[in-house]
Length: 266
Image (cartoon, rainbow, N blue to C red; front, side, top):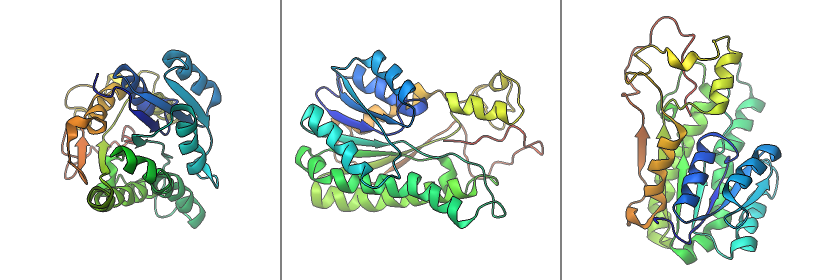
C-alpha cells in the first residue's frame, strides 16, 4: 500500500474531490482527518471509512484558531502528521461588477489564506516526518472564466503559494509542496449547481465537445488517483510543481457563444 501508516489531513472531504481523495488514501493504508462544514455528510464518510481509519472535524476554515484545531485533531488521534491536502474551497460566480470587497475577502480567506495558515501550523509536524502538502487548485488559476473572477484570483494566489513554499520548505524543512489543478469535475455540488442554473438533471450526459472532447468530464476518483502519487514517497524530492488535470488545453480554446454550460471548474 502506497500510503501505509501515513496520517493525512484532507480539508473539504465530506463531499466531492476531497471525499474521493480520503477514500483512496485509506485504501492505500493511510489514516485521515475528515474535514468539512456538513456534519451529516461527514458522518456518512466516517461510516464508510471506519473510526479506526479516520477522525472527523467539522469547522469553517475561516474561524480563528481553526488550523490549530484541525492539526490537533490529527495529533491527538494518531500521534503524528505526514501530509495535508488543502482541498476545501468556496466556488462562487462573480465578475468585476458583482465582486465587492467583502466577497473577495471571503473567497481569499477560505481558498488561499486558510491553506497558508494550515501549512504554517502543521509545519513542525510535517518537518519531523519529512512530509508533504498537496494543494488542490483549479485550471482557472491561469486567468479564469468570465464569471469566476474572485474564485480565479484566489486559485492564482494559491498556485503562487505552492511555487514559493515548494522551493522554500523543501530546501529548509524537507517538506514537499505541490499542486493539482483540476478541470471540470462531476462532483455532487457541481451537479446541483448546474441544475440551479436551469440545466436538466442529467446535463452532464450531453456536453459540447469544446468542454468534453472525450464525451464526459472528469470524475472525483480520477483526481484522487493522481493525488496518491504526490502524497506518496514515490514523488521523491519533487516539489513546487503544478499539474493540470484536464482533457484539453484550458488556455486559448474558444468557447461557443452559448455559455449556459460553461463549467465552474474546481
